[in-house]
Length: 400
Image (tube, rainbow, N blue to C red; front, side, top):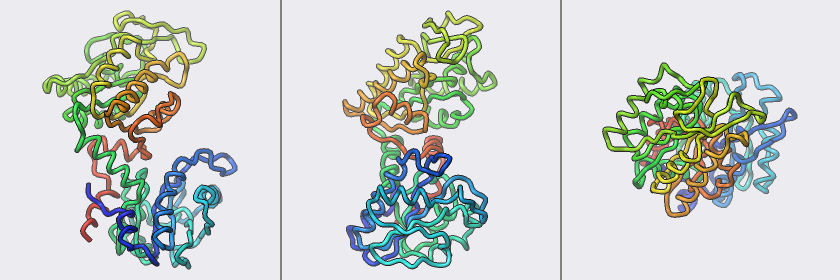
C-alpha cells in the first residue's frame, strides 16, 4: 500500500503557509457530563498536528463523535469539550469552530478544531458536493483516522479525492505499515489468534486468514463451535451449531495445506458466569451436560504457547476466555505472555479489537507487542480481506 505521508510533505517544505485539514479520530468515551474518560485516541492524534505546525501550516482538525442525526447536532454531540482536552494534550492554544463549512479564518501557527463532521448533511452518504465544499477549505488533506478507514464518507474518502493534495498522517501511516507487515509482507511462520463469542462475527476473517497462516488458533465461543465440528460434547457452552459446516471448511483448508488448527484439550468449566461461580479444570472429554466452557486449561495453554513462540508474525484478535473474571482469565493471560515473549525474541506482533487491547493492558503486555491497532471495525475488515475505502482513496492519489 503506497500513499503520500504528511511527514514526507513536511520534509519537502510543502506545508509552509498552507492550510492543512486533518481528519482525526476524536470519537472518545465520555461521562455523563461530556468529559473525556479515555484520551488514547486524542494522544494518538497529537503527532499529526505537531508535524503540520512545525511545517509552518495553519491547521484544522476534523472528527466525528458518536452517531448524531445529520443537520441536527445537540449539545451531547458537540466536540467542544473533547477539543478542550485535546488542546491540553497538544500543549497549544486551540480555537473551536461550530460553523465551518463556508470558510475558516485561520493563519499559519493556529489550530482550529472543527465541530462534529457528522452534523453535516451528506457526510455519511459521501456526498461529492459536500466533499468539494470542504476541499475549498484547505491546500492539503490529511487522513489520520484509521478507525474510520473502512467507511466511505465525505471526510474519509470523498475529500481524499477532491482535495488538491491528499496524504496519510503518522498514525494512519503506522497502521498501514503494521497491517502490511502482518499479512501481505509477513514473515513466516505466521500465527493468527482469533477469539470471541461467535463464529458468525469472525467467519470471514477465519476464511481469509486460513490460506495465509501456518497456525490458526481459535478461542472462546468460536472454539466451542469448532469442538462441535469434531464431535466433542461441550455441555451448555456458547456455540453456533448451524455453522459447524463452515468450521469444517476452515479446518479442511488448514489440513490440506499442512497447517495447524489446535483445539483445546482441557478447559475451565463452570455452571454459570460470575465471580461466585464454582469452577473446575477438566479434559475436553470430561465436560458435564450442565457445565459451560469459560476458558482454556493449562495443558492447552502450554500447547498454544509452543505455536505462538515458533511464529515470526503474530496477529491477535480476541480473548480465549472470560478474562474479565479472575476465575477464567488465566488462558488469555498465557496467550498474552506468549505473544509478548515471542515479540521479545524478534517476532512481529499486531493486536487489534477492543477486548483484545483491554486484555493486553490488563496483563501488562500492551507495551511489549509490536503494534496495537487503533481501529476496531477497520482492523477487522482488513483482516477479512476487504478494501478499506479511505486508504484506497489515498493510494489512488499517490502519484497525483
